[in-house]
Structure formats: C-alpha cells, structure tokens
Image 1 (cartoon, rainbow, N blue to C red):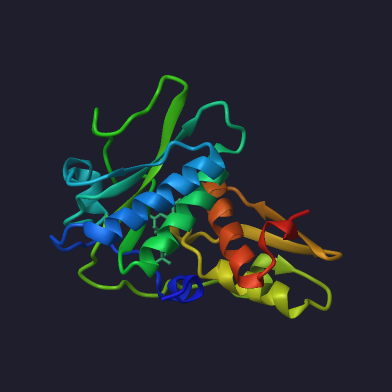
Image 2: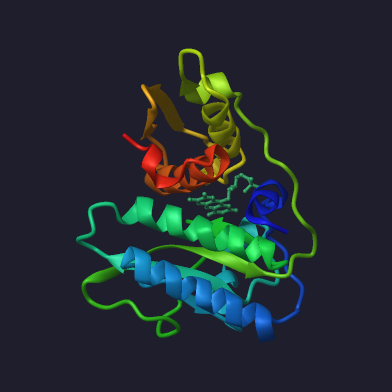
Length: 221
Ligand SMILES: Cc1cc2nc3c(=O)[nH]c(=O)nc-3n(C[C@H](O)[C@H](O)[C@H](O)COP(=O)(O)O)c2cc1C
C-alpha cells in the first residue's frame, strides 16, 4: 500500500486485537519516528505494552478497547507551532503505520497520562497521543463537508482540487473539518477555524493537502 492508498484506507480504529507490534514492522515504525523527530525537533515516542492510559472512564466512554500501544506527541513548550507540528508529523506516522498494515486513532481527550512510561523534560509538554496497533476492524469513512465549504479558488487547477479532496480525508478532532484553503496565485494559504485541537487538525490537513496536490511544502504562502 502506498501513501495515497493509505490516506484513503485510513479511518479511526478504537478496538484493537492482542497482536503485538514487532519485528520488521516495529523497526520501520521506529525508523519513521526517528526521521520525524530529526526533521521537526519534536520528541515523539512509541509506547508499547502499556494498557493503563486507556484503562480509564474517558477511554471506556470513548469506546476504546484493547489499546496497549500509543505514540506520545511531545515537544518543546516554547515551540510557537507546537500543535501544528504535532499534527503534521503525527499524521506522517499515521499514514506510514497504515501502509505497514497497522491502524490508529488520534486521541486528544479519551485517555489518561501515565507517569514514567515516556519522557517529558521540564521544557516540554505532551500535546496528545495516537493509539496504534492491529485493529479489530478497519474503521469506517467519516461524514465529510464538501470542497466548497473548506476552500476558495477561482478556476481551481486540478492539483488544488486534489489537495482539498485529500484534506477532506484527514482525521480532525470531533470530525470538525474547520480548516480552510485559499488559492492565491500559484500558492495556497491554509487557515484553521476555532475548535478543540484546531491547530493540530490544521497540521494534519496540510500534510494531506501536500500529498494530494503533489506540490509538497512549496505550496504554502
Ligand atoms: C486532534 C484530534 C483529536 C482527537 N481526539 C479524539 C478523542 O479524544 N477521542 C476519540 O474517540 N477520537 C478522537 N479523535 C478522532 C476523531 O474523532 C476522528 O478523526 C474523526 O471523527 C474523523 O474520523 P476518521 O478519523 O475515522 O476519519 C481525534 C482526532 C484528532 C485529529
């Protein structure tokens, strides 16, 4: 599965089997995390075989079950774009995981922090986590806004339309899809509306847009 196929196949999965992440899959995931940390300056960590974070009322209420692996998105408190970076690089990991046959779910609220299972230095904070593992199911597509509600362009070129379509496949907190893309000349401005984790959502949606449009990072104003 390539990364575009992974984008279409990915849906949030909240119930996981006992199958462990191991061998080549684990090595590739760890390598991808190392690349993300090198490129972003974040301190992303994979936590394995730790069921306590998802053994709480919030997780049960959120219908999570069997979660024992998660990715902790940690970064420096003084990083101005911390939330957006977590979204961007976290989604890079989510799609890489999907391509490796794993399933995921972004989790901002439905978990509890467990001390001493990952590192958070005094100048850092945990922004949120991503549950990861082998799903009981592959999840289901979310309801989506249409392209007009999240973008503006005169005579939109095909690459812009493809970018917006890819962004609409992105996970967002409570499926809010509050991002907005405007074509300005040959570049694009991306803005987020207000809502929980809207800056994380923006980073996620921008990563999808870059992949879908085929333009990469150079597309942003
Ligand atoms: C930043 C962020 C935070 C999220 N937090 C939670 C959460 O706390 N609990 C939960 O059940 N789902 C959470 N989700 C998952 C969303 O509900 C889900 O992505 C959205 O409904 C779209 O569905 P999909 O991911 O299957 O496309 C979160 C998603 C994002 C992007």
